[in-house]
Length: 628
Ligand code: FES
Image (cartoon, rainbow, N blue to C red; front, side):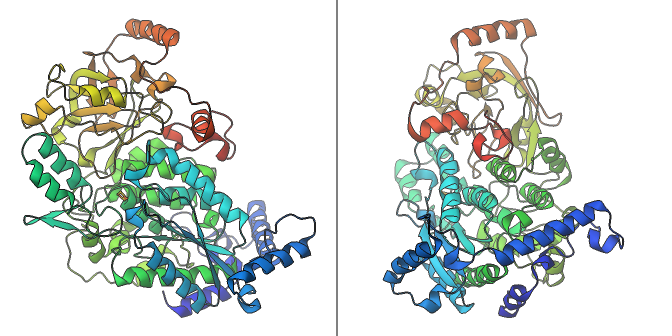
C-alpha cells in the first residue's frame, strides 16, 4: 500500500469507509433509493452519530483517563509519568498507535516479533503517529498446560481490557501461534478499537534426506513411522532438529496459517500479510506498512473492527476456510469472534459451503505444498481471484478498499500450481463437513479433505477411552482388544471434561496396529485436533460427554456408523438400551471427567465455557448470552 493511499484514507470523511458496501452484487442502499425509507434514514442517523462520536471523543493521551475525580489532574499526572521515558510534548500530542507485543521466550513461533515491532514503530512514526508498545499474554501450542485452548479466552480478556484501559487511537495486534490471532480477534471485536493485525508469518520449510519437512504435519507422520518401527530412534532425533528450522508459525495449513488467511480475507490485515515468510524482508516491509495504516486509522478513527467483521465478512472467511483446506479449529475461533458481535455462525451453512466450495489450495495436510509456496503462488489475493464468484467482493479492509477494487490491480500472470483454478480443484468439495446424528445432536466436524477416502463411509465396533489419561495408559497395550476396522472413541476431552478441549482428537493408532502398517482409522471425540493433522477423525462432538452428551453412553463393542456423504454419525444401539444407560449416567455421572476446579481461572473456565458450536467462549463475554 502506498503512502499516498494512507494519506488519502486519513483525509477521507469517516462515512466514506462504508461507500460501496452492500449485499452481494447489489449497490449500497444510498445508491439504490433516491427517496430512502425509514430504515435508510435510521442508518444515516447511525452513521452521523458514529461520525460525531469520533469527532468529539477524546483522542491520544486525553482518552481513558485514570479516575481521580479531576480529569485535568489525571492528564497532568499521566503526562508527568510518561515523560519519564523521555517523550516530548510534541510526541505526546500525536495520535497514539498501541502495539500489542506477544514476544515470549516460551513462544518460538513469535521469535521475530522484536523485529516486527521495530518495523511497525517505523511505519507509525513515518506517518506522524506515536507508537506505544505493550505486552499481552502470549501462547505457544507446545508450552501451554493443559492446552492452549484453555488459555485463549484469558488472552482475549487480557487483550480486550488492555485495549480499553490504555490510551490509544488505534492498535496493531501481532499474532501468529494458533490461539493468539483468535484471542486478538475476540478482543478487537469487543473493544472495537481500530485495529490492524500483523501475523508473524510462517516458518520456512526444513529438509531431511532429500525430503521437504514441515511442522507439524510431518512431525505426526514421522512420529507415527517411529511408533510403527519404520524409522529408528537416531533418525527421529535427527528429524527433531529439522522440523521447525526458523522463527514463524507452522508452515502447513494448520490453525496458525488458517487464522492468518482469515484475518486477511476479513480485511483486518494488509494484503499478502498472511503468507509472507516470517524471515523474509517483505515481512518487515508489511509490518512497516501496517504501522503506517494504523497511524492513518488513528487519525481517521476507523474503520473499527465492528465495521469490518460483518456477516458478509464472516461468510467470506468460511468460504476461504473451506477452499484452503483450513483447520477445524478455525471454525471454533470464527464462531467465537462472530459471537462477540452478535453474529451466529450457522453449522448448516458451513456444511452447505463445504459442498459448494472446492479445496483449491494444495497445501499439507490436505495437499502437497507449504506456506512459502502458497505465498509465491500469490497468497490470499490470488485465491480471491479464483473464488471471486463465491465471495462478497464489496467487503472492505483496513485500507478502505474492497476485494473487488483490489482484484482489479491483481497480476495473475505468474505460472504456479499451488492455488488451483476453480475448474481443477485438489478436492471437489470443501475441507470440512458437519455431521449430525444420535451421537452428535448439536453437530460434529470432520476434515474430510485430510481423511482416507475409504473410511468416510464406515461401520465399526467402538473401542472406548474414558479420558485422555485412560487413552494414554491403554492405547499401546498388547491386551487392548482392537482391530483395524474398529472405531476409536475418546470422551471427556471437551471444553469442560478435559478441561480446555485439547488437541487429543488425533488419537494415535494403537502400536500393535501401527506395526502392521495401519495408518488411519475412524476416530471420534469431543476434543479438537491440530490443523496440521490428518486422518478420518470426527471432532467437536456436541454436547460433550462431560455435559451428558450421547458420547457418554457409548460402550466397548457398540456398532458406530460414520456416513460422511449422508452427514450422519450414529450409535447403532436401540433406544430402550440408550434410555437405560442415560439413567445410569444421571445417577453416577461421567467416569473419566476431570474433577470440578474450585478456584482461580480454572473455576471460572469450568463455570462459563460454552460448547464448540458456540465457539468455546465464556458465556458472560457474549452479548445477549446468559449463563450456560
Ligand atoms: Fe506455533 Fe504451530 S506451534 S504455529
